[in-house]
Image (cartoon, rainbow, N blue to C red; front, side, top):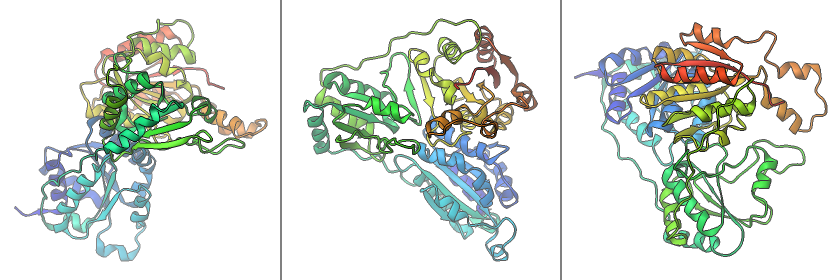
Length: 519
């Protein structure tokens, strides 16, 4: 059967297990759009903004453990989606990023939307290829799917010129074999074991795939047997936590807090993550957060089988030791006006089993980890790359990946406004996402940062740029206008009642929770 390049691309994706595409297409992608009806196994999900499509693909990959595709329109479409692709890159999410381009013969005319797509896509530090010929599209697509899943995962960008898409002679390609994570050698395991049993203060910092149950259990055994401090990276892509799992402390966001956490450490062991650094540069504060004089030891990087390396290490230094597991414990339901403590306690008290939390609560969520530590087991997705506007799209993709699990988006108001059109996609797809919108009418994180960079005083012009009032934003009306039932809570009792209702009813809901700013 003669098919065009677009259909060969979609057929190849589906045959390789990629059966969801988050899309915001334009003219150059119309043959891809038309070809979708010929491959019914592919689910196409429309995002009204490219940053929603890319963020949803990130959330999908984190939960499904396999890639989704995106469909974006030329260089400007890629640019619009770049912030959440940046977060996905930092999360090592497997994404097949399809970028439509002008027909090859049209590019010489420098039409208004012509741009250097390769230059923009190159910033993602992933796999990148342009399909110039229709007959190559299938093979290039198979290469993209395989490359996206190279451990620990990356963004594979395939640029699809319009004539390669509409041209006849497309050939679907069979899936390529995937590379497996590499085992860590026995000599490395023994060397790290010697460090841990050498009598000097040590800390183990884990990340990536180690943040799942197997890695957490091994980490807890190591800590219990050797006395080493253990930490999870500051912003894990997916952290399993809750009752019945080891509770491993996350490395703090604030530089001065990390300095306290690692104080006195003589050996820092890294497993599946990077060395700790300050999120930003600050006057008179360090950028490199490894304690002065401490030795750094690398157990495994993201390309290794990190959970297995930790288990092998635990078997060597903690053969008879069992992990320390978090007991089931919840906060009491609070009462009275919402505060930074009480809203978190409501979530901790009512969080359902197997929930997925997409956390972009920022300054409003400082007390959330303690409130939810003993709640039923759940997955926590965090802002890996620091580019705000991730929470709503990632929650959307997670709900597509796991329709049988409740998804809770804990969302600060300032960050929500970047990608709030994700609510429309949630309504259209009838996704089970409950958004708790933490509304403090401010960029509170920037108020904190203004103080931390050493600025003395804050004048009226500075205040204006950090304030989200005048006019106040009505998130209830915005949500309802996009088809999502919404309500407003000003007290703990109201939040609890509305949260219960949202969890009980299918489909998306938004609760506009009025909370005070941190500062």
